[in-house]
Structure formats: structure tokens, C-alpha cells
Amino acid sequence: MAFNYKNTSLIYLVISFIILLFAISKNSNSYLIITVAIIASALYLTALFFGSYLIQLNFHTKSINRGNKNTKKISITFDDGPNPNITSKLIETLEKHHIKATFFLIGEKIEQNPEIVKLIFEKGHTIGNHSFTHSNLFDLKTAKKMFYEIEKTNEIIFKILGLKIKLFRPPFGITNPMLAKALKNSKMQSIGWSLRSLDTIRTVEKTIKNIKSKLKNGDIILFHDNNPKIIEIIDELILFTQKNGIEIVGIENLLNIEPYENI
Image (cartoon, rainbow, N blue to C red; front, side, top):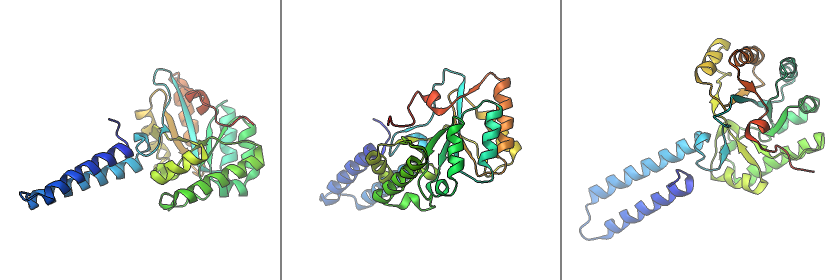
């Protein structure tokens, strides 16, 4: 049985029903029933917590988190842009090395920086949706409000580029039943990652060390293009992959998917 929200909830309901049957029986042991109920609830809440915060588990919704492990290819992705001071310089660095990347953009920032969005696309990089606000409370929104954020961002991108976006990365990588419903209604594919660079909280040296020690074939690496250190990090990463015969490709190449709808 798969470890996901539906199956875990079903198991919890079955256990709860069995506990209820014992509770109403004459020979029930109240202490044992309470203990079992507490343990079952604790396990269920733990599953919900880790299932929400670990996108790789595909607990609430199916995300594509990595490519083929049998090929020496990886993809690099950038969240939280476009940034007016960093993204353009990052694109120059990528172009210098003939590298294609994927940018998961925030709707509000797209409105503020449409020329950078055009530049990303013109240079052959892939664009994905990263919600409209990237609010710290995004995962507490209703499915309707999440759907609105996804659709609004898609509409803004369409006005600028004429593209119908298919790829979405959840803010903070958090998933839940509301997001699963919003993605289903918007017909978006969730894209996660297999390697988190931790570039926003670590030094350049520690970030590169972390990547080098964990990098595997087919990895999708999470970076941020609002991070002032990102260009130095990417330069170091590219040198490392070149020395080790690892090819950095666009996410559509790595995963063999179409990032946009045919229009």
C-alpha cells in the first residue's frame, strides 16, 4: 500500500473505528483504549507533518522530484525570482557556460520585472509558476485561494510571453490536500527537487560542499535567484560538473516533459 494522504487517512479511520467498538463493549479496558488512541493519533499527525513538508514523499499530490538515475544529467532550478539585481546577471553566467535552467517565478515579481521574464525565455530557459504572492501563510489558504494564485500568475505570464504554463513548484515545497485540489483544478504538474542546495542559509563554500557530497545522476537541484551568492555558487557548480562529466540540462530534457501547453 502506498504511503499517501488517502491511504494513511483510511488506516487512521479504520483504527479509530476499531477503538470505538472496543470503547462501547462491556469488557473494554479504558486505559488501553486511551493509550492506543493517543498512539494512533500521534502517528497520524506525524505522517501528516512529514507528508506535508517533504515534497519527495508525494504524500498529498504527485510531484516529479528527480530524473533518470542512469544518465549523467542533472537540472538546476531557481525559485523566488525574478530579482531585478541578480537574475539578469545570473542569466549572463548561464549563457557564458551554455547552460539552460528553470526559473519558478512569483507572480508579484513578474509584474514588477516583465523585461527580465522576457529575457529568461529569450535565452532559452524554462519558466514555471511559483504562486502569486509566495506568502508565508500560503499553505494555510483554501484550495480556492491557492487556485486563484496559480491562475493569476499563469495569466500574467501569458500576457507577457503568450505561454500557458504547466509546471508549478509549491512555495517552501509544502503540499496539502488544498494544494492537491488546486493543482488538479488548474491542471498543473508539481515539480519538486531531489537536492536542496541550502544556498540561502549557507556560505558559498558550505553550499558547494553540500552539493558535491550529495549530487547524484538525475538530480533536480533547488537554488534561489534572489540570493546575492548565487552566481559564485553556480560558477563553482558548473566547473565541478564539467570536471566530472555531468551534463546540466533543462528540466524538460531531464524529465522528458512539455513545460507549456500547445497554443
